[in-house]
Image (cartoon, rainbow, N blue to C red; front, side, top):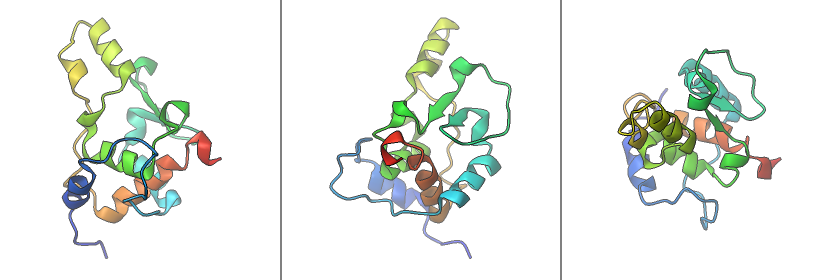
Length: 142
């Protein structure tokens, strides 16, 4: 049975959380990284993202537009930071996406991410599992 708590409540709790690992205690509890990886594929996140040390289905998108998650570029991201990025994707727009949009002559698009809003599509346990999967890919956790 899916929890009835809306993801919006977690998004509100995370609204003021910086995307850094220096937090005194995590807000987002540990979830199931295996289920998180399954959700990543089911929700087709691989279409725009690659993940450190994870085999994902192929999708033809220029490499400059794909955001690599879990590697050295996100080494300091915690479960909280990933949950915040999933619930509020425009809070940080990937530099490589910004550069690609500016190079394509669309600087306005560089201010917003093309990532869809999942606030009404994910339940809390799914958000937790996705954040756990992604945070587990960080090199500092290996």
